[in-house]
Image (cartoon, rainbow, N blue to C red; front, side):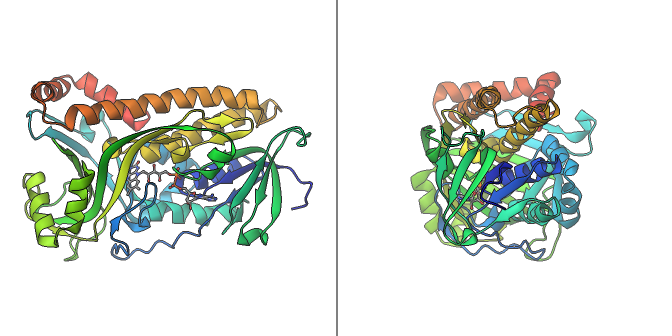
Length: 424
Ligand SMILES: Cc1cc2nc3c(=O)[nH]c(=O)nc-3n(C[C@H](O)[C@H](O)[C@H](O)COP(=O)(O)OP(=O)(O)OC[C@H]3O[C@@H](n4cnc5c(N)ncnc54)[C@H](O)[C@@H]3O)c2cc1C
C-alpha cells in the first residue's frame, strides 16, 4: 500500500464484531484493512480445556470458555457472509426451549421453538470457533489483516484535506511505524477501547459490584437443548446447553454456566475446593438437571454497564463492546455488537449506491444516534431486570412471581419479547 493510498475502511480489533465488520465491508466491494493486537489461538474440535483460572479483567476471558447465545438475525448475517455453514458443521448447539424461574417469588416462564413455528430459538456458539472461521474468510475476501499491530495515534483534521482519517501504527506488523489512511475508521477494540479514547469519546460506567462465574458443567440428566435461568436473590444462574461431549464422552450433558454473584461471593466460590463449589452450584440450581460435575476451570469476570457517550466522532464509528458493555443476564453482548455492524453496513451501502462519501461525519452521526439509543435502551432494560430479580426485598419478591406468571399466560407478550431479543 503506498503512503498516499486512501482505503475505504480500517477496522481496529478483530474479535467477533470487528472481524465480521471487516468481512462484511470487503464483501460489499470496499477496500478494508483490519488491525488486531493479538493473533487468536486456532479453534480445536477436541474437548474444551481452559488454561486460566481465577478472576479476569473486564473484556478478557480464556477464549475457549466464552460461548454466546446467538440470535437468528446474526446467524443470518454470518450466513450471508458465507461463514455460518462452516460454524454449524464444526460445532454448534441449537437451543429449542427456554425456562426462566424465580427461586424466591415463584412463577415461571417457559416457551419453546414450536410455539414460534421454528426449529430452534437460537444457537449456542463458541467464541473461539466464530473467530477462527471469520479469520479464515478474511484473506479470501481481500481484507488486509495487520497483526500483531497497535494504533498509537489518530488524526482527523485540517491536514486530512482529502476527506480521510489517519491512523498511526506502532506494532510489529508495521515494523514499528506506519501511517494508514481511510474514509472511515471502525473501532471494535473491546470494552477498554483505545480508539474510543483517541477519538475523545467518554463513557458512562455503572459498576454492578457483581461478577459472572463461568465454567463448563456436566449434568446427570441431559440439557434437553434448553437454556435455563434461575433467578436467585444473589443474581441469575444460567445454564446454556453445549454441543461438546462431557467428561464421559456423552453428548447432550454439558452446559456452559454464567453465575452472577456479588463480588465477594464470587471470589469465595472461586477459592472454594471443587466439591464445595459443586455442592453450592447444585443447591443454587435446585437439582434441576440432577447431580453436576465440573467440566473445566472456573473463572470470574467483573460485571458493569458501560456506554460510550457517543457512537461516532468525525469519521470514527464505535461498535461492539467498545460502544456498550451490558449485563450478561440476557446473553445479548455480542448480539448487540453484530447489530451495530449490520446497521452500519446498511448505511455504507446506501452511501455507496448514491456515490456519496461513506465516512461523511453527518451520515455517521445519524447512524450513531440511532444505535446509541437502541443500545442504551437494551442496557437499561437488562439493568432493570437485574435490579428486580437480584434481591430479596419483600416487595420485589412478591412482584416477581406474578410478573413471570403474567408473561407466561400472555403468549403474544412472550412472542414480542422473544422476537425482539432474536432480532426478528
Ligand atoms: C467471560 C465472558 C462471557 C461472556 N458471555 C457472553 C454471552 O453468553 N453472550 C454474549 O452475547 N456475550 C457474552 N459476553 C460478552 C461478549 O464476550 C462481548 O460482548 C463480545 O465479545 C464483544 O465483542 P467485541 O468484538 O466487541 O470485543 P472483544 O471480544 O473484546 O474483541 C476486541 C478485540 O480487539 C482487540 N484489541 C483490543 N485493543 C486493541 C488495540 N489497541 N489495537 C488492536 N486490537 C485491539 C482484542 O485483542 C480483541 O481481539 C461475555 C464476556 C465475557 C468476558
